Image (cartoon, rainbow, N blue to C red; front, top):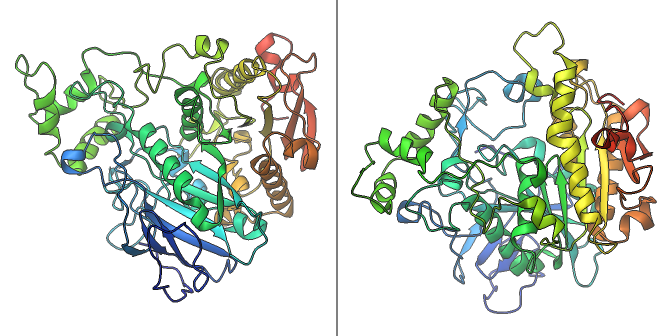
Length: 541
């Protein structure tokens, strides 16, 4: 694990589980929850932010619990230090060169040390710092001396992206430390959840409703936060569920799967909605899981109709062997392609989102949706590239995968009435340390270091600019206005109105970083008009 200079306070010894959760006054770094007592840390670089880096929210899904839904932790008096980040959930570190594992985006993937202690983003092996015992969350909270509402601070609950195959807590770009240090008015929680075949197995031996384990992990983490965040100074009734990319799609999945008990007060979807998700087709043969099982000698054709024997056999195979087989198979480009992602079970993930949206079968909560202006560009990066890719192809993907699905998500929620406000913004900023190639524009994920304030991690490419800092601060303030009051905060503090897609001008949309302007209000039709045949889409506004 990475080492950090720490400033630790003395552990409080008088915490008793069973009393109302509260911050022990003698030690703000030791917090008692229903499932244990946890001591965090303060990094001297961020002296007003408490970090609790590895808190378990469910039992380890190992051995016989592999491929079962997350199980709640029992009440506990056990004490743990949470000063190191947890292992990431099992995932493969691809050896195929791509923009997102190049030096130009260093720090946007999981911590993956090699035996010499160096970062290794193209190992072609299972991540070194990964484990099946990975169901942990991390909490960043202001010091207890910070002013706070009597009921507690609002909470931003963040779910990582990564296409449901990679991602986790321990990603430098996604560390909210400087953001919490600056605001001192909100708490951020980030989580691990199971990925790939471990999170979305689509296995014959599992009960219907138990295939989307990664989503169930997210729900279990959200329930833990609801039950325990007050101990950190948070308000359990003011949780905003935020996700990026696959995490953003996940937030939308939750809105449809748990409409009567969403737990969250609002959703923030950063570069993704369920309307743009590529959900795999229903497969009555469970072919992908069985293909992997066959490789490990776990297939029993003709004598295992319910898949129980296959599943039990696979539970005995090392997770590293499974990850390496699937990952290296994919790196070689072999066919049939293997995919383990959202499973259409019509309980957690549905096959009829358009119809459900039109019928209003969705949580009636405020939503904020953001996109970058040129989402698809980084997909076309190649090592030693010398010429720009065909932007017309990139633009077509921008429109099909992000722009119009976001517009459709806006339209469906608008139909639910004014009590379901939709706030929209676009990140269009380009900066020297994020845009070594100008043709990239504001690419998918380029808004992460702006949102989290981690842009300095790219100073090895070029120096951070003051304009970049200004855009970051403004974006954070707009997001926090929503997090603090998702119904009225944006209008009251930012003059930012909900998006009304039926408005002839498309409604109010914020654009960040374009044309040397930190933030500006634009007509939504400038972005969404292409979906109605009214405008051409401009990926470089």
